[in-house]
Image (tube, rainbow, N blue to C red; front, side, top):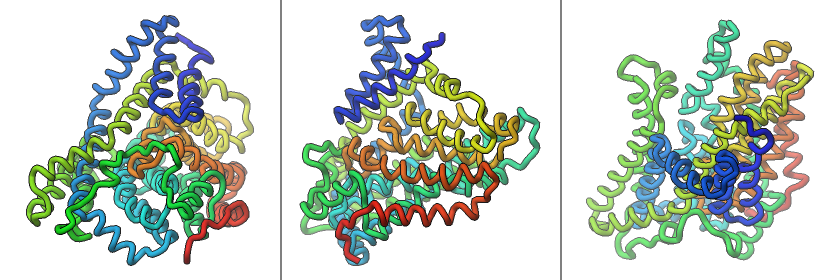
Amino acid sequence: MEYGILALLPPLLAIILAWWSREVLISLFVGVFIGATIINGFNPLIGFMRTLDTYMVNSLTDSWNIAILLFLLTLAGMVGIISRSGATQAVADYLAKKAKTARKAQVATWFMGLLIFFDDYANTLIVGTTMRSITDKLKISREKLAYIVDCTAAPVTSMALISTWVGYEMGLIQDAFSKLGIEQNIYTTFLQTIPYRFYSVFALLLVLIIALLGKDYGPMYDAEIRARKEGKLLREGATPMASKELTEMKSPDDKRLNWYDAFTPIIAVVAITIIGLWYNGGGLEGATIREAFGDADSSIVLLWSSFGGTMIAALLALVKGVLSVEEITDAWLDGAKSLAIASAILTLAWSLGGVIEELGTANYIVNLTKGVVPPFLIPTMMFVLPCIVAFATGTSWGTNAIIMPLAIPMAVKLGAPLTPTIGAVLTGCVFGDHCSPISDTTIMSSTSSAADHIDHVRTQIPYAITAGLVAIIIGFIPAGLGVPAIITLPIGLVILYLTVNTLGKNVNINS
């Protein structure tokens, strides 16, 4: 059944309500309810029942979703043990001696985000929870931490040579190529698109420029001034996505683990994830590392790694006599409970995704934007289109699956440059995902940073738009005219620097 313009109503209503009211849970529920009502003949009673017994239940019976929820809760429990044992505070004390300024702490957070390149979910949770105590101590707002975490997650993972994204992205390209009879090495094509992921590259560079210059603009400036001058890491009345049980967890005064003990479970999580992706993806059967990472079920592997990290954190605290078994259990439960709100929001976001899929929202947007476009504007169009779809649906992977089969044939048919077009789709999804309050990675960034979710979205959007506009004007339009990325990328870097230097105001970061 075709729902026409009504297909836009649930996601738009959820986004507008969340933006206006700051009540994400209620806004998402309303979006699911309205969508279910439309699907069920505009009967609100049936729509309410289907919201509960179909869309919400389905989101909690999907194996991927359940594994991700368990991963989140387990990793939060691990962080709870690390915090209660005093290792987190020890890390903060140690790094405070090294990263003595807000500038250095932000650069360190950015660099750590680059290192956790293999999965965006693991990236957001590890970087945010590890660096939060340091950034708190240096009076960096939670909004700024969430922004850095979010910008070093999907942009990094989507461009990494080996990650959980690579196989999926290559699979979409391969499918389109095979249907068109294009014989070209897919991995080579994937590598060639990386310089043309203009938004992802510029988003990463913008974070670094802002950190180094010590300047901010828009609502982020207000958040940083509030944190630096008043010591308020959150806005008055804000609702952080992690509870005080975790963010203010105290360790025993007389016993405490060392700073390196905090990294032992985290290193274990990283190691188990990398080995697990290789194993789960068929490494023992002869698959290459790239093939294994692409074929692996990352949700299951992340579950393995979070449990492994939890066991190591618990054993360290127990063997060193810092915590008893009862205290370890309580710390784990406190950590897991801290993500109750985030888990509920993710569940409703997935439920809304089910409604959106049934309404055909993404296809409606694609069909709406079809038309006669000059070949040189195809890369620009194929950046803007996934931006809109990903923003409305909250999913970058789903948007890729919708847009890529349209983009590649269109580029071939109209004689548009193919590599920039593919790069535009892959990075446009990241832009829309960044800006959308119903995106799972945006929710996770708010969660790991203990930031108010809507405050994170509000403060991040001006920076995302900045990188997006530079990507269009300096990147995709010239690329459509045949200008190589090696020329446009340095120009984009200069434009970003001038933009921050002109629009930004100093937030009193010491050198």
